[in-house]
Length: 114
Image 1 (cartoon, one colour):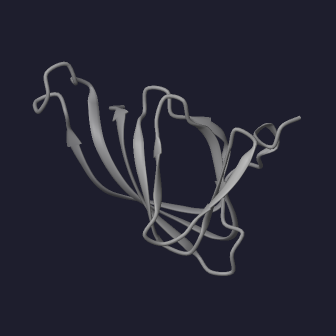
Image 2: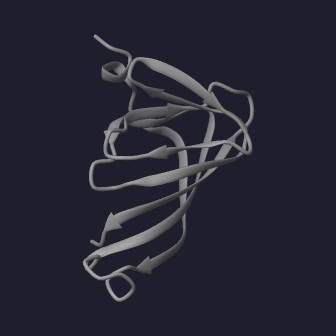
């Protein structure tokens, strides 16, 4: 079984919604979607799981503090402050904080409005 398939459930994660924009009036063809910005904090030992994908939900992540380990395609990659990653339709992953301090990221994505 791959590393991704064994990802634990979410624990030690706080998500704060910072802002949204209704994209329907802004861009033709984007009705029902919004641009969303969130601050995600993962405590030491915390996990943002289980495995999830970004099909129909592209985004970009930027790390403010701490280190976040991104698990995808059987590879674990550590990202620290000032670095981030894209999340496109080919992204299937889960995240964890293996460090000793809280890790904080800004996540911006396009989502369907609920």
